[in-house]
Structures are given as C-alpha cells and as structure tokens.
Amino acid sequence: MKVHLVDGTYELFRHFFGAPSHRNAAGQEVAAVRGVVGSVLQLLEEGATHVGVATDHIIESFRNDLWPGYKTGAGVDPELWSQAWPLEGALIALGVVVWPMVELEADDALASAAAVAADEQGVEQVLICTPDKDLGQCVQGSRIVQVDRRKRMVIDEEGVVAKFGVAPSSIPDYLALVGDSADGFPGLAGWGGIEDVPADAAEWEVPVRGAPKLAATLQADYAHAVLFKDLATLRVDRSLLDEADELRWRGPTAEFAKVCDVIDADGLISRAERLAAARLDTA
Image (cartoon, rainbow, N blue to C red):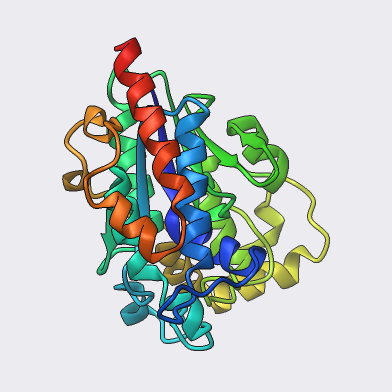
C-alpha cells in the first residue's frame, strides 16, 4: 500500500488564496473548505487508498513558548481561519482520518504518521503532500517522499539534496542557520551542521567565502542557533497512529451529504458515493 499524508493547513491557505470567493446561504465564506475537500476527494479518485490529513486546530503551539517571535495567528485573514474548523469536520465526514493539532503542529503530525507508516513492511511508500521545506527532514530515499501536488512534483532524498544542498537529516541545521520566515525565526548567516562546525574557521574542511566572519557569527550567537534548530526539528508522536491500515478510506459517512449542503458542494456527494461503490465492487 501507499500512504498519502496531507498538510491540511497548507491546503486551506492554498485554496483560500487560489479559489474564487463563495458564500453559502448563511453568508459564510466556504470556498476554501470546498476546494480542500474536493482536492482530497480527487486524491482518492486518482487511486489513493490510505489517507490522513493533519491540521493546525490552533496556530500557536509549544514552540511559541520557546521563541517569542514564532508564528501566531496575527495577520491571518479571519475569513480564512473561520474555515479551519469546518474543514476538519468536512474531511471527517468524507471519511478521512484527521489529526487536529493543538500542542504540536500539523507538520509534527505528518512526521509522526510518516515514521509509523514507514516502519511497516506492508507500506510500499509514504507520500507527504506538502511543499513545506520543514518536511524535507522526513524524506528517506524514495520510501518517504514529499509531493508538491500543485506543481505535480515528487521530491525524494536526492531532490532534497539538490534543492537545499544538505541531506534530509540536516534540514533542521540548515533552517536554524538560514532561518524560516514562514515560522518566524530569523536564523544566522551560513548553513551546516551546527554541532560539527569548528569555532576556528581555519579548521573548516572546505573553503567558504567570508569564513572568519561566519565562524564569528555562529560562535557569538550559538545559543540562538541551537534554539532555532530545536524549533525546526519535527516531533514524532507515535500515539497519533497505531498502524497504517487505520488510514484506509472506506467511503463517506452519513454526515457528508449534510456537510456538502452547508458548503454548497452537492456535486461532491455523488463523486464520493460513486468512488466508494467502485471500491466495494473491486474489493
């Protein structure tokens, strides 16, 4: 089996900014919910059998306690965020497993599910559906890969190295030093494995332009570099998933028609029902 893990928060933002506005009969903005549910259903129609979606139930997490500048909900369009919780309910009604994260983040849930699934011999491949660079640290050869569905691009371990110049295991080091503006920490000048960088630039094994200055910057702000690496390191909580087969899609629930009525997406009902019936016929 192949396991597809979807970044629901990324998808919510993508469809909010990419889809035309649509308000339901109650005047609520629902375009992003419609778009994400339709996109996940399309993933199933394309052959995905085991799907899990991780969302940020709230934007703040334990990382906000570690770094005051870490991302918050400040500046997020209220009409975007008003669709976050309805999206979770809609996906559950579709019959998809959803992890609504509070203390940890959606990225942590994706890393957790990927680790559990990859440990199973019956899992052929784990596909993490998000272009978020944080998830690059989870990539393992071609067994765990990232998928940018918008660009129709699969990123394996070689792809991570080609894009960032470092192996997946060094992505937290890379982000600690170059920063991650999306998550709200600035990083330092330079990149590399923090713990392995000698304090004296003369001991560096490769020539680097401005090496003395980079070395001085790293040593002067080493504590921040270590903190930023901790922020960038995804947590693995194996309690989120016991086994990959829990992610098998078995069709929409009885609530799905009601949800589609609220979001003005009746066309999704017939699509989901047809697909579920086809899966039963081939079972």
